[in-house]
Length: 172
Image (cartoon, rainbow, N blue to C red; front, top):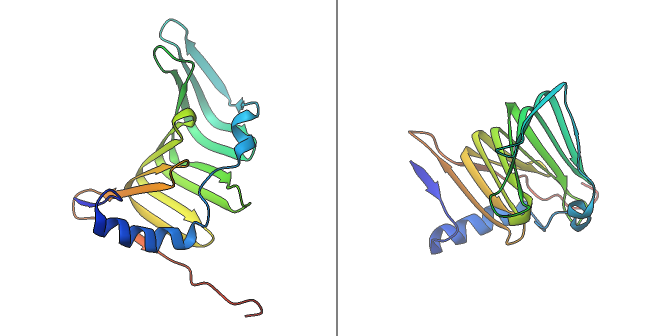
């Protein structure tokens, strides 16, 4: 397993140099969390006793600039709180949002777990994070929108790959 974690000093330096080069600010649009959530799907079902709602087939979730597309989304109520956990699955499921500076960020994977109140997005299975033409790919990517920390890892003989788009000067 190849693992990059910003908790390790060397990995922190390498990851900061590569990832922060294409992520000028990582705080999502602050107004998004204050907006209503709209969920559209072909079908939906609920297990009210266990507080699990499932949205199936062509699911689209919007909240401000945030857009999630998936084949299946389950919304689970976190025990003892009002916090919801969104689990989106698809081939791929996608998560798009405008950052505070107006730059779009896109995440895609077989599975996306979004915990808004914890500022955490976990994508796994063919995971890809893209911004301004640069990207990070791996088996799993964990991204904290509040602390701007990213951890990417791959399993088996795969590697985490980062592709950085070169900065261009105005007029070129």
